[in-house]
Length: 142
Figure (tube, rainbow, N blue to C red):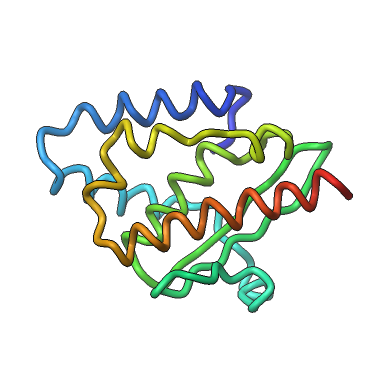
């Protein structure tokens, strides 16, 4: 999944992909498909330390560094939530921690994701963003 492209380039690619769908049913189906390809977190890391607090579903995201770049893995027990995690991982994986901390992630608004999610899913998405950035900040400082 990771490529050498920047966060902005990856985000724009997702905006372009979502623009291909005429309705939100197609976009949700695409999001669910993205979740099937998520870089899967090892079951040993499905612990409270990697759990995203603030999501109604169980979501785990692990951040690690390799050669100065973040590597994210994740999983969820809910298909749409897993797709949301996959969306963020696709954009933020294999980036320098500092770039993840500073990423604006406006592509979530550009594709209309925030306005088409229920308030509980939107809160969960915001929790994922906050906690992934916090983990990037901790690894950046290490």
